[in-house]
Image 1 (tube, rainbow, N blue to C red):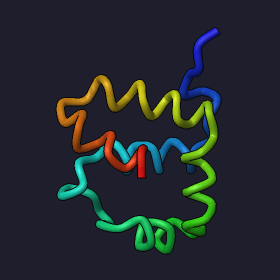
Image 2 (cartoon, one colour):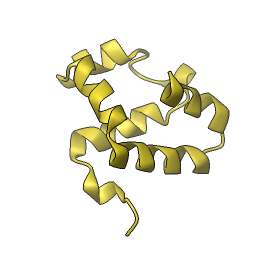
Image 3 (cartoon, rainbow, N blue to C red):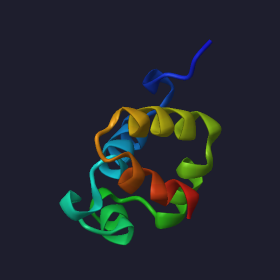
Image 4 (cartoon, helix red, strand yellow):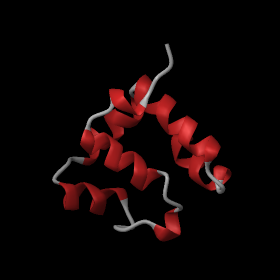
Length: 77
């Protein structure tokens, strides 16, 4: 069974959409500012990025996006 967006909660989906936005177009422009605006800790955002189901959905979205190399680079930092 494949991993789907249904396995992510609303805040994770919103963060995923932000991550999949090319960096120059992101509002807010930084992870720290995103966390502050959404009432989430940056450590929480990083922990979501490490979840296998989150990463699989993220990778699937990135592969389908036009700016693949630009969007993938944060996944490997």
